[in-house]
Image 1 (cartoon, one colour):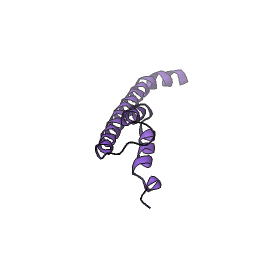
Image 2 (tube, one colour):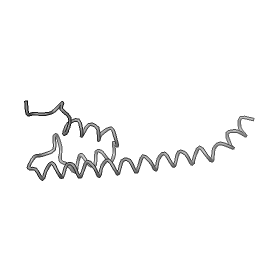
Image 3 (cartoon, one colour):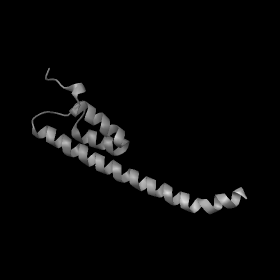
Image 4 (cartoon, one colour):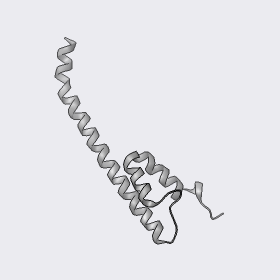
Length: 85
């Protein structure tokens, strides 16, 4: 009985896994593009991105996704790292 249920659900579950993977890939690309654009804007103002270059930040975001994007934002745009006090 369990084997029949498992076989019945294997197709839809695999489809959901592929859909989830596709969504993750799209999110990684979108966040990496946003980080690359923002790093370019930072460099246009004459500043430099913190720790590594903008290209490295974009690549790290492409690999690490939203988590690395949040770290980038915290370092570059949050009040935690503001230097104007």
